Image (cartoon, rainbow, N blue to C red):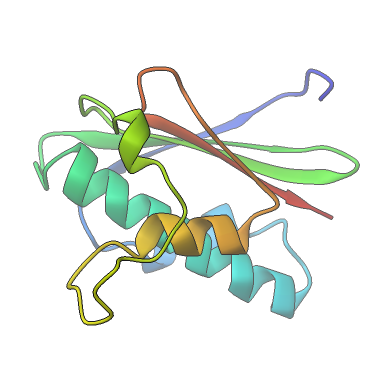
Length: 129
């Protein structure tokens, strides 16, 4: 992917995400595409707040966004220790009524490319235009 200028956003570690997600989605014009991306971004941001920052209001979520001719790309980074590689799988939980475990699966369904930083506390989400 060619080098581009990234837009940088910082959000408090809170689950009040609606207006923040709207801001992140501003460049996405197609409603159907925006809805799909919105679901994936919401899941990734909730995971960053709850699992990464452990819902600590003194921490923040950093999001970078870049648009290329062919891709929408977001990087979401929390201040946590990172997700271990074995937990980065995109499968549904074995128990259908499990309280959690669907977020990473949904993220993979919403984006064309999902990549983790080595540490596991930054997620890059790419959607092909």
